Image (tube, rainbow, N blue to C red; front, side, top):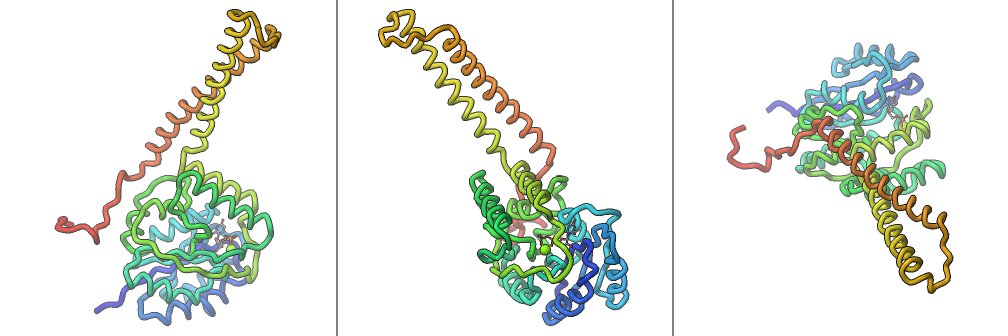
Length: 319
Ligand code: UDP
Ligand code: MG
């Protein structure tokens, strides 16, 4: 029986300082000690230092190592997608190039996959983000993501992940451009298991995800996964409209029918203020409605499949 093939995918961007050691000393040994065939796909994401030459050198030394070089820096998400598109394995494992995700855990990922999991996700154990802002930021990120209806994303999920062929194929069918791999994989479904690990410290080089980039990533995740922000403003609009309408009716009855028994002396500007608040409420509602239309257009343009069939669980189908 031929051995199963594992595709290990590493996005690499300006990692010349440590990439050679990382691949040869820690990643390869961890991959090779399993009883699987492997291909190691190194995706050079438009590095501007000597990373590419090092990757090509690695490919020369070991025929299992594929160097896939993107024409410029596209970002980690597109780099991962390129790797997954190229992967031929029965499963693919994605891991960062900076030793923050310990390769020693690879056998554990494979074990879970072997016992039936189709997605195995590495989850950062508590409080290993360094610095207060990243820590609070990531907590807030997951709290908001959950609030906005994305219940399936486990806090601390990382891109250290193994996915089965069936998931790779479905993932490769998705065509949206603004992609957060994590969110999409969760959206796909399938049997998911988790492995907790301590997120290490970068051995060399600089993290290329600045606070600004992370912030954009967070906004992207919300916008691409949910319409809750729009709906919230719609509700605020409804509240304002109803409240100012009641106030308006109260004002008319109090002033013109009962002759101001409460002695409020509401003059023209108060009445105008109530009327304008009422109009603002209406504008907010109509904006939310417009936004809902846009979100429908957005959903259509993402072109996601309506459903995904789990062939393994299905019976008597012809495929
Ligand atoms: N990376 C990439 N393209 C980019 C930025 C990063 O391929 O534009 C790679 C990087 O080389 C590393 C992984 O993505 O292997 C994670 O990057 P980083 O360590 O900067 O992010 P963090 O650890 O903060 O998530
Ligand atoms: Mg890192």
